[in-house]
Amino acid sequence: MRAPPLTLALRAYRTGLRVGEPAVAGLLAWRAHRGKEDPRRLPERRGLAGRARPVGPLAWMHGASVGEALSLIGLVEGMIGRGFSVLVTTGTRTAAELIGGRLPAGAVHQYMPLDAPRWVGRFLDHWQPDLALVAESEIWPNTMLALAEREVPLLLVNGRMSERSFRGWERSPRTAEALLSRIAVCLAQTQEDAARFAQLGAPRVSIAGNLKYDAAVPPADPQQLAYLRPMLAGRPVWVAASTHPGEEAAVAHAHAALRDRFPRLLTILAPRHPRRGQEAAEAASAAGLASARRSAGGRPHPSVEVYVADTVGEMGLFYRLSPLAFLGGSLVPRGGQNPIEPVRLDTAVLHGAHTDNFREVYAALDRGGGALPVRDGAELAERVGALLADPARLGRMARDGHEALLPFEGAVARTLAVLDPFVAQMKLRRLDRPAFERSALARA
Image (cartoon, rainbow, N blue to C red; front, side):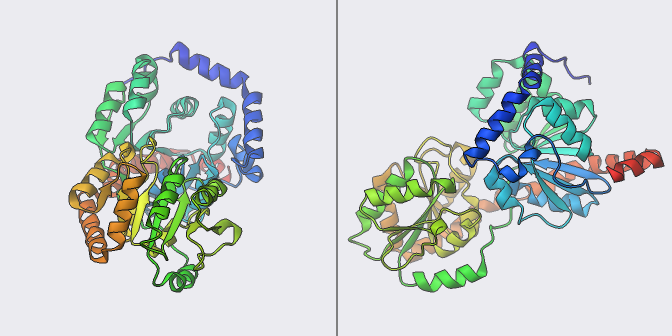
């Protein structure tokens, strides 16, 4: 079926970013100055490759931030097992720093170029992917159109469409259809997501589940684990993970409210964005609590009440050190953070009311007894105190959490089953190419 023509809005978008490329380059420079871009790898954001293309068939997978990128690891391994090399791109500096150490042999990382037509073009000219997979809801018009022009199949995996995004796209139905109709297959997380994508014009939509349920548990440095465990022995410990502005103060006040009852209490406070470590420490100080920042070399010595874990890629360490976690982004309207990792690491979960990003899994954890909701900072203190005083209940919550996640697993296998026909088609297409063309591609 032929895709609908481009709308005036899409044509204007393409022209605007073509003409406005110098302004976009200026934005990149500003972001690098603010520490939001890696200045050493800034050319990658303009489509200039940082390394050679691997020989042979190549699958390109994109996950914008940490969660999306890590959810792709199972697919990366599956495609490597099917004879493909894999290019993984991310859009944030934190994701790039984390994903680099998690990729298996046969996969390489680059930054995603910004959606300027010339930058996208030279990115695709260099990498020449045979297949493109985008995680969740990353819809970049110029990139999608360039893939379609090159006849590179684009699959949306782990597809998610929030109510807010859906309402936004509904106001421009022809533009939505013009873009989404160019997706070869859309694999949605839930029935609700699938219905929204189909209504907006995605032609082939099915439900594969959430890849994050199949993700491996985050690793921990064994040396750090062996160093910190004895230091924390005998202390009641809880972690406030991936907190957002406004939540650090609630966490600090919860600790202050529990201080008399648990004089040796340690709160591990891990802001969602590590660069906000100083803000988190200031919230602790404002509540009259002694803190130390991990990024500054601080350690959770007996005099430290709030240990600010403002580093990248260490949540696996802190979940292993704590039997209880509060998941941030949920006391404030940010949709909540991923509860799967702490549950997999035998950690009971507390969360606020704002959990739309993971609505189904939070509901299942609440029903199954692996998680408990809190309304505000006062109830957070109440729940933390009750659970830390009842280790047996914490153990039951950890076991119940594991049980609650079982029905959600299997998304990686279902997604790879959908990819297999594309894999076969790509391999046949390569065999059909003239020998001189295959040789030129191998040198590219």
